[in-house]
Length: 148
Image (tube, rainbow, N blue to C red):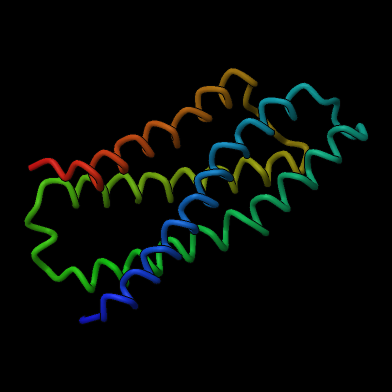
């Protein structure tokens, strides 16, 4: 797929904005879970967290993930098949897939909280809160430094 320089720049800009919004959600939702664990089931606080978590996932994270992937695929197609013969791109792609898996798990954990059946501790969610940050570091290094 061939894109004009202007089209490529606009698509890349939209991709970066989408990724920023998605990462913000991936870094914030597990932190909400850390606080939600301490709220008594059925309490006003717990119900407030449920609303916040649902709105964050459905209103920001899901659309941001979808647009990140769609615009990322367009950029990938515009780069040509040679991109797969580098070291950095498959590593980056693997880290993106891992972010998508994390997103799915966040959805499952949100649903468990919504149904008052969470089984994980605050410590568990604190650790899970670090996963997107580590993946982000890998992705940024691969994209900016492009090792190999």
